[in-house]
Length: 118
Image (cartoon, rainbow, N blue to C red):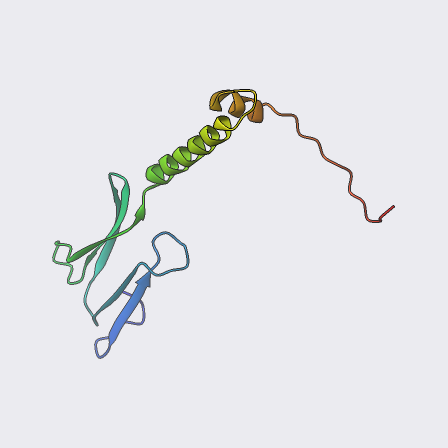
């Protein structure tokens, strides 16, 4: 429980599991209760489980987001789809893999910075 819990009042706390600035779970419990929570991943989701009375049985489990593996799979799928879309419009008929390889092997240059207009 939070350090401000006392025997005569109630205590609450909010939990931002994925650190996005939005509270995913809010908990209000009787003061003095020995509550506990657990954050875990199951398949492609992340959950928070709360045990309000510390009896060993979680009273509630809340899905709070996608696991790292699920986010990576979604990112890869979106990237693959973008390359397929670009390849479909390529006038030279190159495949998505060819275009991706060209992009990854490109040579980058850095232009000199100017502080005046000439």
